[in-house]
Image 1: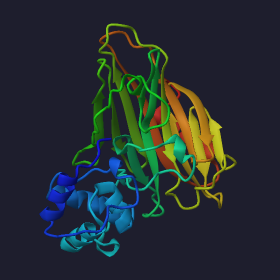
Image 2: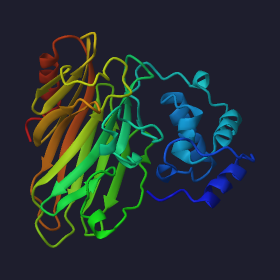
Image 3: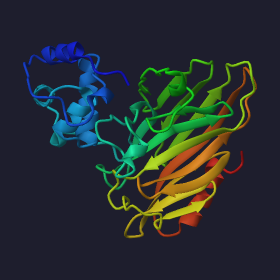
Image 4: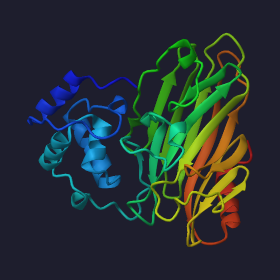
Length: 323
């Protein structure tokens, strides 16, 4: 990520008509995303305060604004947890871009330095409007070329080995609640994600286009469901998880609720108790020059005790094992 330039931060502080001298928040400011205008500032403040319940310090870390500037902007827009509008009872699941500023992991933080927000969405649970999972999609893409993309800093990619820095991106937010994004890599590979919320769950799609002159193989993808933000699910263990390829699921501490994910062309289901997180990781079919390959994914919530029956119900509708 590019460092937030002091002049840009200063412009935004002036923009909200406040002279502030308190320092930027506690997180590394090199990962912040300054709002581009007033409408963008308001959107992210609503996202962070109404839904993610960020502190002023976390908002500061996400935006690069000082804490005093954040406080003034929230007052100007009248954004507090109490002013959040009520959602219709029959609305689709709430899915929002994850704003950054708060690390989505509890542990193994050295394995995800500077997590990029443009791969991450928050899916809020139907039983608790303050609880959400963060889905990192994609967290990583491998190919026969090596580690072709990584959504944070950890191990070298083919780009860091060449001292190439990929530009930051943002999700496209559509009026119907759909999110989508596309990234074009320097070697001609392009990939993207589409997120479609429904009342039953969240449909996800990954696509990859081979713009190189050589066939791409071993196109393994890592998609991560992070549990830090979900009350009752954040125990650092795999004992609360069930893996039945392509389905991976996590059970609440009281045993009455589940979070479920699955992907077509799944090659591995697993969990990392340190984060904590769980995965249904797919693999694109080999991709010839000029071709585009696609994967379909799913995430949903279930209240009950027969999760195997819920897998079957999802399978009948989504056919995630069929591809």
